[in-house]
Amino acid sequence: MLNQNVYLGKDGKRSREGLGYDAVRDLIKPFQGKQHHVYFDNFFCGPKLLEDLFVAKTYACGYSAIETEVLPQLCTNKLKRGEKIVVQKGQSNLVFTKWHVKKDVCVLSTNSDPTSAMVQIERRQQGVEIEQVEKPQPVVLYNKSMGGVDHSDQLRS
Image (cartoon, rainbow, N blue to C red; front, top):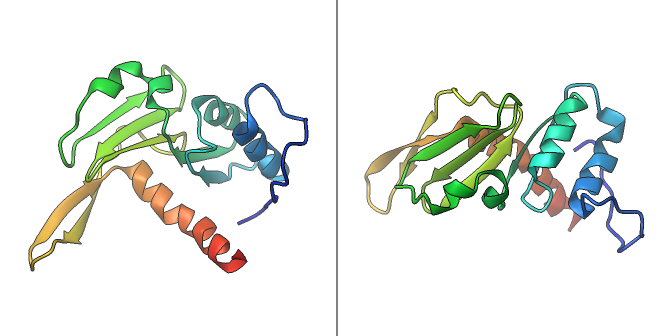
C-alpha cells in the first residue's frame, strides 16, 4: 500500500463524480503518470474512473457491481459455471469481464488483455475430487493484488 486516508465524514469538496471517484484520484495523485497498477473494490470502481486513470497513465482493476452502467444487455445473460463474457469498450483500454463460478463476478480493468487466456486452477470439492476451474486474467490479478489491502486492514484493526 502506497497511500491511505481515513474518511472522517463529509467535507463538502466533492466533484460530481462522487466520493469513491474523488477518494481514488486524491490517493493516487503523487503516483500518477508512473504507470502504476491500482486495485480497488466495487465502492470505488466505475468506468469513468478507470478511463480517467488510464489517460493519467495509471492502470486500474476492480470488482464492479455496476454492469448495467457498462453494458445493459449483459444483465439478462445468465452464465453457466465457468463461463465468461469479456467486452472491450470501443477503442479504449477499458475491459469488462463477467465470470460465473458460484455467482457472477464483474471486473472492470485497464491492465488486462481481453484476448488473454484464462488461468487454470485446481479446486478441491467436498470429497476427494479435484475440479479444474479457469479464471479470467483480471480476476486473478485482482485477487493477487487486493491481498495487500486486506492485510493492511487486518493490521490496522
